[in-house]
Image (cartoon, rainbow, N blue to C red; front, top):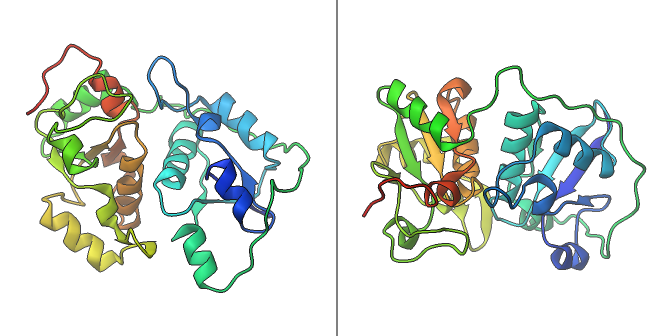
Length: 256
C-alpha cells in the first residue's frame, strides 16, 4: 500500500514546514459546527474528505500534528464513525525534526482525487449524551474521565463553545497532557509503564469500562488512544463525541 501522511495543523504552520508529501486537513474537514460544535462528520463526509486528500483504497494513512490532540481526534473519528484504521506519528512534527528528517515548505503539492471507500458501522456508534448516560447506568464500575484542564474541571473557566462552566457530576479528572512525556519538548506518548502508573494514580482501571470527555472530544481522544495502546477492550472504552459542548447545553445538573 501507499503511505499517505495527513497533517492536521493550521495552514500557516503547515506552510512553515511539513513532512514532504504530506497533505493538510482542517478541523472543519472532519467535524461540524451544528448542532453541537465539534461533532464528528458522518462516514460520507469523511470519505469525501479523504478522497479530496488523494487517499486510495488500501493506502496506509498516518496522521500527524505538532503536539496537540488533534491527530488522535481524527484517528478516533475515522475508526469509530467510518471503521478505518489509521496510524498516528508519535510526537508529531517535533519528533520528526528531532530525528533529523528534512521538511518541505509552502502549501503542499496538488493530488488527484482518491477512491477510498468508507462505510458507517453496522451498529451506530455511541456519540451523544443519551447513549453515553445509558451506557454509564448499565455498566457497573464505569469511570467517567474529564480530560480538560483543571480550571475547566473546577468551573473556574470555560471554553468559548461551552454554554456553562463546570463538569459532569461524578467525573474524575485527568488532564490529557499528562499522557505526553512533556508538553514542552517531547510530545510523544509516555511509555506503557508510565501510562499504567498514571491511570492507576487517577483511579482509572484499564480493564474496566471508561468514558472520556473534554470540550469537544479532542483531548479525550488522546486519552482514549493511550488506553487503547495499553490494550483496553475497545467495547468498554468510549470517547464522548458531544462532550462538554453538548452537555453544557442540556438542562442537566453540573458540578461543582
